[in-house]
Length: 95
Image (cartoon, rainbow, N blue to C red; front, side, top):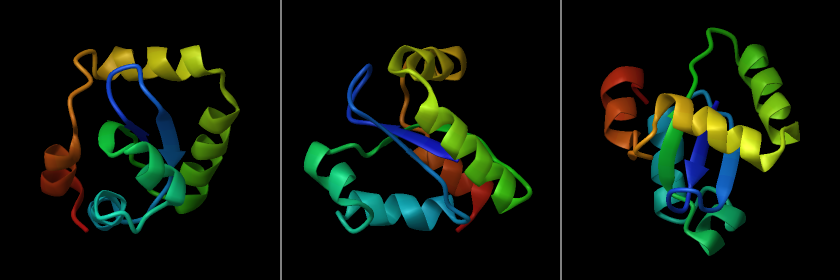
């Protein structure tokens, strides 16, 4: 499960994938989602890993139902500088 942002405190996108590196590549070349492409939401700001895709989907649905300020707080808890975590994802999660 991942959260993308256009910039710190900008537009957010919550998604789920079984291959974060491949999915991020798709988003960055404009092939992942029309919403992401149109709003340039390509900064990976939160990443949660799950052993089972069903658990990741459940978490994605949970976060999508949250208010925006709750999502922002969750991002700030683990990534206060709003760093792009893509390089870390490439090293730690594989394709």
